[in-house]
Length: 102
Image: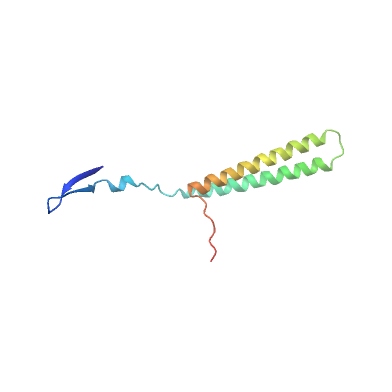
């Protein structure tokens, strides 16, 4: 909200009265950043497990194992895309920052 006031020379000036509410900066949610790190680690472990499962089905000689291998690799791709999107969201929310070269 902005109100008009008259200064000493009779000119009208605008004076902001609620300056703190115009530019609101939410507090940093440190707990969300910590939980996000554990989520990223869990997704990476799932990606590695899916890759190991696909390797197991690749080395198997039983019929029908190639379909299981394709399913495991598709699951790995979906997890990788999910991880990429989560990293973009975390960067936009300020939970992660790029490292600076010193």
